[in-house]
Length: 545
Image (cartoon, rainbow, N blue to C red; front, side, top):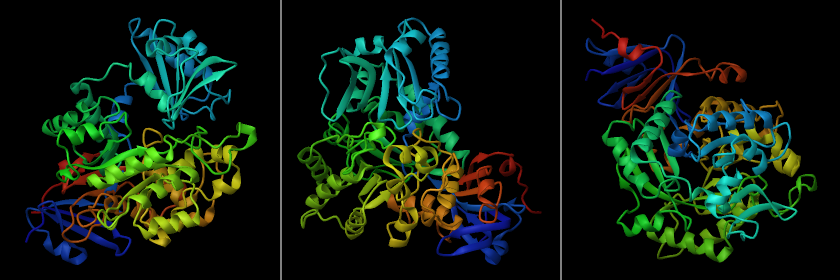
């Protein structure tokens, strides 16, 4: 059997259990052969890619991100800390955006980190008013759990000085006056009065996000909270994107399951777990248990440090309500993908999951997940392992927010956060991911963090949790596939597996960690066909004569 494609001339990482080979051959979208057998399978019609000392790996799998919001956010005001470090720059960018829009049009921004701003606090409504006096403004903190609205936005939302806090949310006041800050479920008060994007814009956002991820070496991804931007219309937008050829990635879809989400509405409309196919699969429901440690809303047993205001965070729901939601979605057959960061929230979720595990509806084989799962105890790890509950962490949180964790929680809790090595050694199969647009989706930042445990300021937090490069890639490939019931099809480059392959610009297994940050994906294949080609190699590959 003659191969369609041969990749050789460098190392090929087969997977953590099998190590390396020097060639991979592809036929009909699947891995045909490896090593000498791959070379022997090449014939006159085989397209050839010469690695030239580079490395090929299984394509990355983004197990936890918000793909549609990320795509839509590409046209919003970029406030991420890589570019924005001062309040004046936040306000300048808002002002420029407002001047380009008609009066009354919304100005939306994403990604600021108050801990990285020169003022070391949240912007205020009054400051946003000064930048955009004729437009409603809403900017969302990098964590996605805190936002700030200006006066026009709050007026449209019907929020005044006496508006009560909604369940699981906080409208922040100072001296009885509104500051403009909204935490957790209170953010819905503002989001619900924003105009929803139409299908054409959503399809464009999906396509733009997928194209960007493909350029980074991803062939699979997840949209973690579908329905929170435009309701059930988001499901139709994904179907349209696939029909229009704008969905190059394999997508694992997670319905928004909070009461304000669409999971129940989708169920009543006939959607069922595992509906779809290997390109677009609807498999899970998400429920929020708490917020973020950077935003002081993750729920902990022990309080935040007094220097940042103390308190123990915010539970999204009381125990009885979240436990009822977990039981409902578990018994409907969905995978549970539950957001919980602080140890108290993780405990609340575990108690609910344990109560839902029954003879009639057993947990065995369900692969329920706790998303983030950043600050947990040894006992909680033990109980998760006993029921096959998977952690889906974001190691890059340590890179972008690690120093803020130390500031908010102290060093002891921060050193133990996101324990990738412990999880891997204990057999938890932690699926590394980014939570983009909360953090950068660049996989090489995530790999660097797993290998070094260094923050973006150079602080090393918990060096005993470092992974080898091979282990880090395993967490970013096979473990992600495992959480999506796809490890028999992708995540390794063994014969018979889908030929989802990334060719990297350097051999990340042989270079210094700092060089990993400068690495790029040169080629990304899905089913052996290029979905990204930085240098035109696949298009220009000449069949052997």
